[in-house]
Length: 444
Image (cartoon, rainbow, N blue to C red; front, side, top):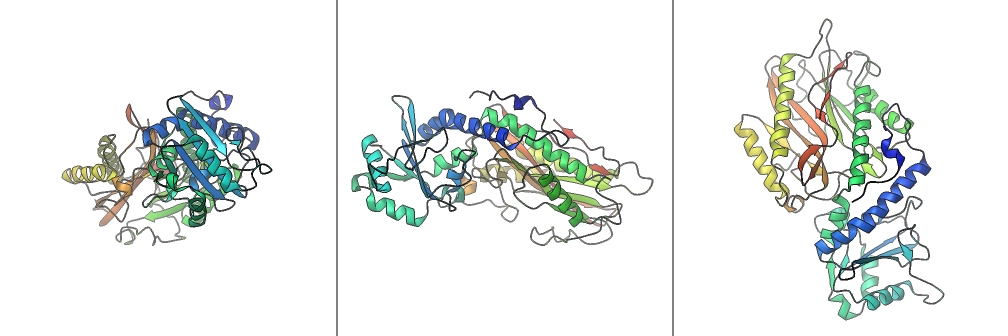
């Protein structure tokens, strides 16, 4: 697949650089979408053995897949929007049609003249009959919420109009919908590198003396600073940032930091181990990142050796896990193998990695959940695919004798899996960020 021609790809989109204005963002989004429709979609339809894909939505109740197909100037579907993608493999063509009153951007042309055929459903049936597809894919799915966007009303009305001979050709478009959502193009990966850089830079600034004054600043203060920073940059976040503390003077963390029960508004103190969970949305892609920082005590110049060793244990869990990525292996297979290997080395790992891309918690291979370390039925049985991005997320528990307690070393970094293997999109944390002296760095 070709790379985009836009000069924006040569512009470093860092925190101190200009974020693209809306008009230029729209041009990028639309060119990426054209590339995906013309070059990626035919391949995915052939692979899933679906020659017609029908996607139906109504305004403000959009199918999650359809939302990713709308042009930059469409913020929602209009009235009832019906998209039809027809793949003729023998002719190597793909039609992109809208049974709607308007063209859906430049990629999908209107195929409905209401003056000639007043009934939208009847026009859809005419399109189907004219092409006589072998299979008609609809977005229904038991395990993948993003691929289950066809609502009951639209399904029932469609089936009322559809002739019986075509009803026998209806199939779930789950595999096609998941593949559309999870597969990243070469152009998108160029952008992704820049998005992750922005994310890392915001975290580095948040975990610095510019934002944190020990003894005064609270974890909630930092969370809202991050949220405001994103807004001030003209970006968005798909979840509210979280910041939490582990320290020696209390028992916080012995309950394993249940994700629904983190302490709030804690005053940050010297000697604290800070953790954040943060992500941004930009150019229709999402990031999700967790990093750790240490607040230096008076006269300290570096983090304690025991915390630095704990971070190396964290990196080892990552290496074991990503080293087991293999196309065709299910998420559950990779998860269980990685946990077994980590424990055999004396580590105490937990892995809860999810697909990342057009959505933050996206569709695709799920590799554990924080409360499902024995495997995830359904999503976890889905095989690993090439050209996919994951939030490599998990932790390892480390006993800190000096603190007389366990500490959870949490991680999350965007990682790309392709035919050349696994790589981090833009590095990973290999040193603790230091406050006030911020000298942490990322490994390539």
